[in-house]
Length: 131
Image (cartoon, rainbow, N blue to C red; front, side, top):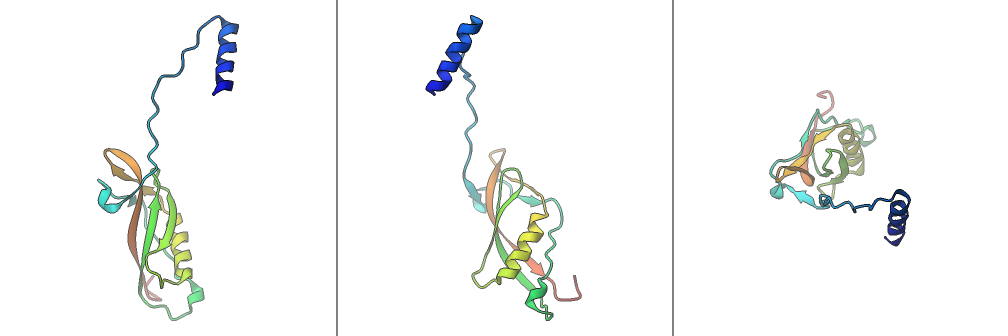
């Protein structure tokens, strides 16, 4: 702050004008990640979420449901994808991250403003030949 004041003082001396400090209050940054029960509206995918079944898991693909925790920021960008269950294979999580990263979201809303959210979703992986 002292360096800023000296710049302002020298600018005022050079122009002969008194510089007023910027008195506009900046809107506080909301750093909270709101959970589903705290939201007025949930984030919404703006396109289909397509998850490619990882070939590394073998040819015998079976239908499966994957639970994921997503953190979506106030701009609708996916910030983080984590497994919703401890026994989820890491390759499925990697495939989910890749599929979800390609999708844009409408952000969650609380009190008429876009906010960061942390939600759990479930995604059904289809058996081989049904995709």
